[in-house]
Image (cartoon, chains in turn purple, red):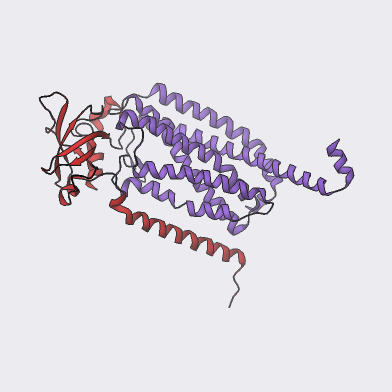
Length: 248
Length: 156
């Protein structure tokens, strides 16, 4: 793992991994969504609105998966002082937030025709909204600390503490009477007919690859930004010749 | 005493912190139990009726054969049941959501009257976790909409 401590090795890997994950992600997402929108039969109860599932469910998984990633990056930073961990955390938070928002918006749109309401303060909906707020707080916190040149443990600790929301989201439909139905896919059980399951898995895999591509692209951008800042700082405090070069 | 490498010390500390946070959060969330519940089950409402002045929600299955429309044409009456033996009659004046049918899940918002009839201001449909195409529904879920999933939810 410390092989990637040197950003140069990471950057070499990212150079081909970004286009690969991006292309495959776009292809699989488009396939899964077109399949789900055009090819699957209407559900016995929900009718055509079942098609929202192919966006809503992968977005929910990735919103939660993103925070699990932040937690792992946090542990890697706190325990191994891995230099890329802070950058990975900052990079993952934005796509994580985007998928959480997609999940909330599509859920609201789905709730209106199926339940008869845009929003209710039920356990699942509320804990997912809290996840969105946690992402916003993490982004603000890690950006603020990124401005100080030193590596800070604070965003990593925040990610660890925020991870407690993940089992709460997962269990919210079990512990409390909720408007949201219980999980369809659990270990050893699947209540989704294969007609819906395959496009769902294809679209989830595609969106997961897009999540990965976005994360890698942001990591490259953040590294480049850090490098540029360091160079400016060096040149500002360095020889006048360098300054003249920048100025000229 | 053998010295512990700082890296392992940090790993232990991070693990302990994670466990402590998880324990605190989970026990807190678990202790919320009924306070964070979105609705009363009929059995809970019968055992501990809320005051008639309090706005509450009642959730369960619409009992088969209980749904009828009153003479004014827009008021409906039905019974919400769970499989703990709870049954609460409900009256609602207004438009029910599309998925509201007998044998399916429902959440009614309103007040429990002194006569034991729940007067709903709003109805929300609740569906189960099964996703089945229309053509296949008889193969998968015995019986009609709602099926096993909502019943399982009502069991809790």
